[in-house]
Length: 156
Image (tube, rainbow, N blue to C red):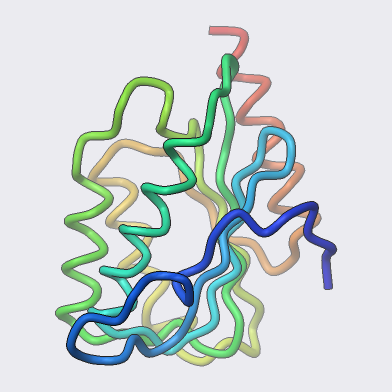
């Protein structure tokens, strides 16, 4: 388990509207990596809460250099078709200047429920928006790749 420098926000902090979100996502910045720790399964309400929580932390990012994101998935990656479509919508939505990572890594161990079913959907979502994305089994692998992507973006 990795240690967090500081918890910036969480879907648990987003007020519940009508239905309770299933799953939770904690988000924090550590250097030039934006971390998401996502514990599923997930529903549409959770994806909507993610949009709110993510916007809060993106407002605070004042990076003057490239940065990347890493999503560590715990327990389950399963989500309803509606939730997946909502996630794709959020990813396609325009982001303010400097508020988009140069790459996104997912850490999804073989023990995560739905890994093989859901992973191709996420690969497609990121391919559709033109953002480099890779899936790894360990956080260390994901960090190495993300740092290499950041260095590559600085050389452009």
